[in-house]
Image 1 (cartoon, rainbow, N blue to C red):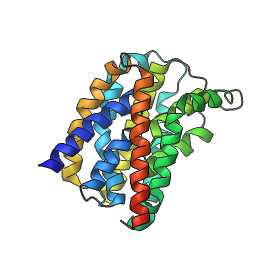
Image 2: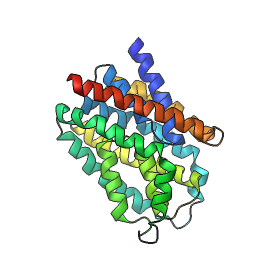
Image 3: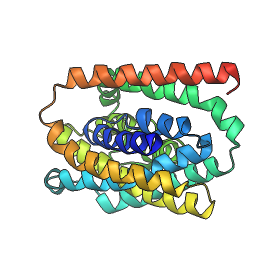
Image 4: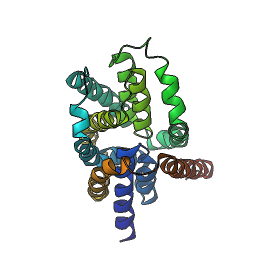
Length: 251
């Protein structure tokens, strides 16, 4: 019963964070690992469990997405799915031991990017004159990373959008939610074919992400961003430290 409650609550919080600012993986991935799911399967299950939450969040931002001008939505969606398929395939050929060694470093990277997300977006925006808006040179690497490890993907997406010249944060959050959903759909197909999804925990967590994802859009317009960032950074660095400790201990 404790595991069920933990996975559901992690899903709610993770779905809400993904809708608001990203960082949901800092909660959902460790929750699965702590309930005994192997690292590769936990990463695959996290991505799949987040899928309905991404869709719910995109629905919450639907007016902002419709208001976007000049965005080739169909093209970027297709290429995001293509890159996600490559990343998911790379995860499928990774061993649990090898992936477990990478996890602390991936979590650290994602947490650092998230914590200094404003600076990352500002730095990225300086490159917009040198980057093709909605171009494959920035879209595909982002999607491959997201298919392999979903952690911090939302912040990386926002930085890429800033490089594309986007400035409306709600439209950026809407596009982020939609592309995350598209990426998760193709990753789901790859992970299901590879037998890497733990269906029971995935279903419990997915229910939580639906609730958290849909409620995340209204929260995004009300919660003080600095408070939210501090909380997520605390969780991210805390989970990074735990996984480094597990790596040192050989867990």
